[in-house]
Image (cartoon, rainbow, N blue to C red; front, top):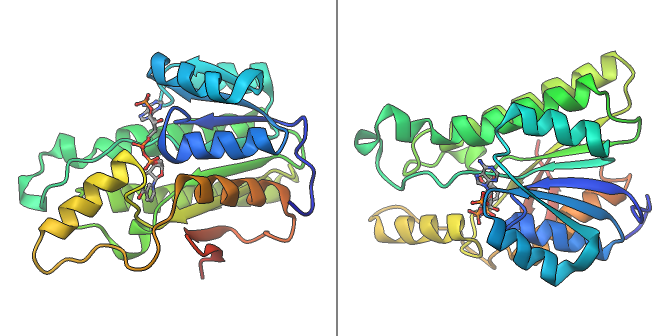
Length: 245
Ligand SMILES: NC(=O)c1ccc[n+]([C@@H]2O[C@H](COP(=O)([O-])OP(=O)(O)OC[C@H]3O[C@@H](n4cnc5c(N)ncnc54)[C@H](OP(=O)(O)O)[C@@H]3O)[C@@H](O)[C@H]2O)c1
């Protein structure tokens, strides 16, 4: 990777037990970082630890718990924070959602980004630190089978840009960037939606090569390491990173 060396840096990755989060933890440890990985499933975190070794520190818990965010930011003072944890929304048309199922990604994805971004600014993390949030391509185009998901992911992009402005105003030197992955069947969340859209007449899934968890991990690692990647938001596809206008 060109640019900033992340060897020896400490990263916290939420949702590190599977899917993109595991791919991100793998890419970051391969680049020489120490990764604190947060998820609720202790068994799956133990599998990641067995695969990645001592550079991966598993922490079991709810990433949307504000105490968890404050405690881990204080303890590890990460140079890189990857806010990836996300709930799988129910694949249903809008009239089949309840307010609770509609709001699931607000309670997990948005709530956790809100809490961790707040802690990053208040700590504050050291100048030169990076906070990367997982939005979604759905934030641009909508996602008619996933209730409030697309709006929640658009809000994550807004929160990230608001935090970037606060960092700039206060001269904190913390970089905030959001990434918008393309829908892919490579994770359990994505597979559920690729199948749901394929089953729905008139709606199409993503075309072209599918994004893999390894490619997602490599994209996040290059965002952390390459100072030339300085835009506020990027689409992530199998072809790599592309700035979002
Ligand atoms: N896959 C796609 O096509 C796609 C496209 C665009 C954006 N995204 C976004 O990318 C991120 C990762 O998605 P994915 O596809 O990798 O999903 P996934 O395979 O379902 O993995 C989700 C991860 O988040 C963790 N998680 C969920 N709720 C949590 C909570 N309350 N506290 C801590 N960890 C929690 C899960 O672990 P536990 O269950 O063990 O807690 C798991 O490690 C999400 O934010 C998603 O919205 C995905």
